[in-house]
Length: 176
Image (cartoon, rainbow, N blue to C red; front, side):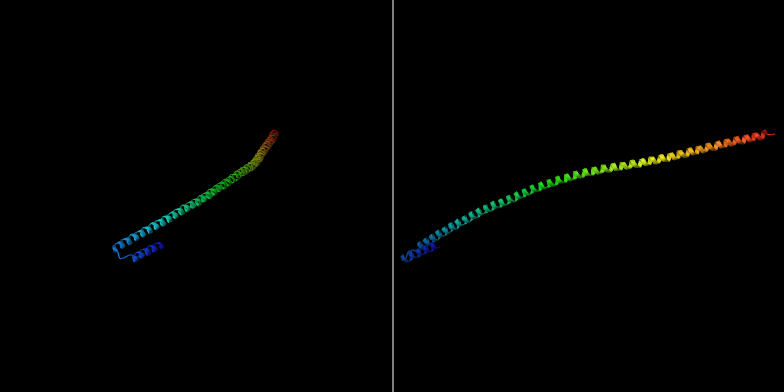
């Protein structure tokens, strides 16, 4: 702006020192200097805008690079967390597998023990049942023998009585 003021003062000084001249030339010169000034202002404004745009573009590139680094860091942390979680899951799965295998083995042993115990008890019950049946069979057999003996004794007794009665009847019949 100081440059413009100096230019205007110079023009004013020339006008005052000069003799009266045709105003058309003065106007043309004044318009030329105004056009030069406008051109200079436009060039300065264009240069300023270009610098500002370059600064904004540079700043945008820096922001983009910083954002990329931030996202890469987040992805790296996420990848580490996933890896750690995967290892933990594998460890837990292995522990669960061991526990399940141990539980299955324990259950198998308990089942085998219970099967043996039940089989022993069943054998004992069957043995007692067979013994009881043997005793009952022996008792039945003993009763049958007793009945047979009683039958034989009764038959013998009847036979002996029959002989005695027959002998008595014979004696009576033969006695005159």
